[in-house]
Amino acid sequence: MSSKDNADYLMEMATREGIQGHKELSNFMGQMQVESGGYSHMSENLNYSGKRLLEVFPGRNGMNDIAAANKVAAGGPEAVANEIYGGQWGKVNLGNTEPGDGWKYHGRGYVQLTGRANYESTGKELGLDLVNHPELAENREVAAKIAIHYWKDRVVPNHHQDDVKAACHDINGGYKGLSDRRTAAAAWESKLEHGYVPGAPAPASPAAPGNHGSTDNNRHLQQMLNQHGYHDAAGHPLKADGDYGARTKQAVEAFQREQHLKVDGVAGPATMHRLEALTQHAGTKPEQSAPRLDQASHPDNAMYKQALTAVHQLDAQHQRTPDQHSNNLAAALVVAARRDGMTQINHVVLNDDASRAYAVQGDLNSPHKRIADVATRQATATSVEQSSQALQQAAAPKQPDQAQAPVLLQPTQQTASPAPSR
Image (spheres, rainbow, N blue to C red):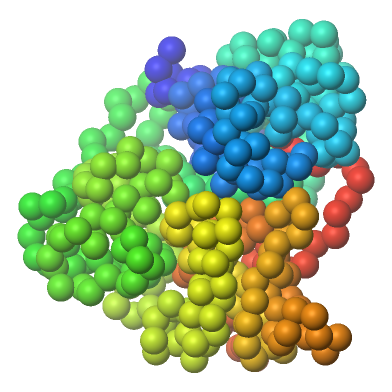
């Protein structure tokens, strides 16, 4: 079945089960689109390189360096699943108590159901023996039932049907892929508003600038990339001059990589559609954006540069090439440091499993040093633009209806209960 067939089937099942309003249905379809890799597969893609494995799951069950990650990746999908979903982490967060549970209960279906505990509880609620027959979750009909059940069980009771960010947390236990989810939900809402129904032809992709686009179109592209924190390979913002050169190509590649698009450096229809949707969702035109942390005009740019230098030192220690994730982490650390009243970032360090990153003001051995921390994985997934907005919101006078700064940048406590999703 094609991705469109899978999406249409799920939409038809969802509307039958009462998920019908444009806002709710587009949110539901967008969330499931991200979970299932664009409706392209019913079984989790676990074909990781060692480098990518370390980027996505740093410190998982003691996987702290590229050598360890390469060794796991060399074992193939089964070894990868047992490493990232097994061990002590899998036992605590997913209820994977038996050897091989990581692979046996890897992500399946539209919602990518993951972990023995989730297979067991969902199976009981749907009258299915998913513990002994986890492969049932790959069946499209069963997968649709699980996805709809997840939505009604975890999103609807919290009244988050129309809230992409909150629904992301309800489903996933965090904010992984939030920008993708917002983009997908916005795209589905646009389709629905234009009368899309299951079985209808896919809408044509709009024309977009590329390497040979007009100067005005390329300038608009550069402004949008800057707005969302996508820069050249050295982390420098683009000059919005309309010249589609090497630096613009590098920024496009960074955007494509983070958005899970084909990485070719060409701003084709798919790339522009995703970028335009993000910009439209932000509700502001690029040229009207407030300065970002990585721009010299931002009041905390000096602290951002301190953080970025320290993060690059960490990258070097871990034999990792600095990239957009490095920029994202530096920006998130600035937000945390400012929140805790710090004025400088002299060092950035990781805990033993690399799950948390610490910004340190002062000497590392001083009893008077100041520390702020973030969850590493969540911070690297938060764009510089989002962190800049969070910092701006934190500095603004509180209003009764003011949106809170992203929860993912606030300190979290480890929990021994199974993760509520996946």
